[in-house]
Image (cartoon, rainbow, N blue to C red; front, side):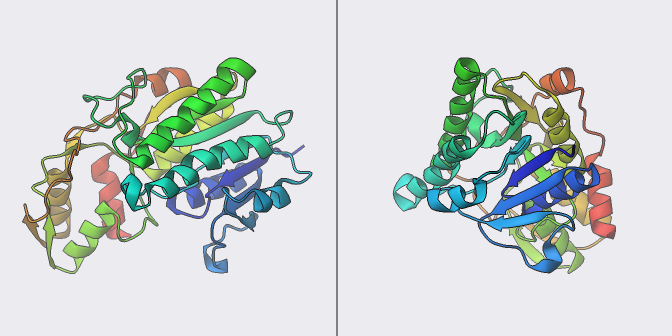
Length: 300
């Protein structure tokens, strides 16, 4: 019997890649998203539903008489708004949405629930960030991600709810929106534009989408983890300035104005992962080097 997979928030950059991999692997795949994607952006073989996971009536209609073997939750947008500037809605989306999903799922059929977390959960923790650190959220977004993580861990300990929390660091690759860092720099260099950037002293961790997708499916196959937190990243720190310089060199054009964009308030200047747990627990390691991944993006 074909196993059933639900991807929540499966129409964005990462979600679409996961949906394609799921279909390729033979899953009966369902995607729930806030907005229905245009036909051209849909993955053939996927059944799409439109719903806001904070809306109980919409969820009830979608989950009625349905059972899923696996769930991957990518719902909600990255939003660093302050609490009084919309952060309460961010918490509702990222935390309450997870609670609603757990409430509506048929636990008797569920084999694994993958919660996609964020490196932002570590906040100001010293690098390299590892999973046994106490989180240090500095925004409603990171707070809500931590809260969802602790909720699932509590359910794992007390009621054997099967879940894994995967903390992504910075993901890049084909199909990413142009307003994201690497596509934006590539576009500026390809057009030989002058563009403003920070001084580039931040240490960051970039991982190719192909490696991230493999990591998610490795986690999906592991049962009995009950709330384990696992970093998915390259484990290789690189300065933001190095990325800009690399792209400029590979393209042979572009005029970055370093230092024109200030660092964010409370920005952690060293955010990169310890991935030893992913290697040991999931038997997963990233394979795509940063240089190869960026070169392919430039030449696509």
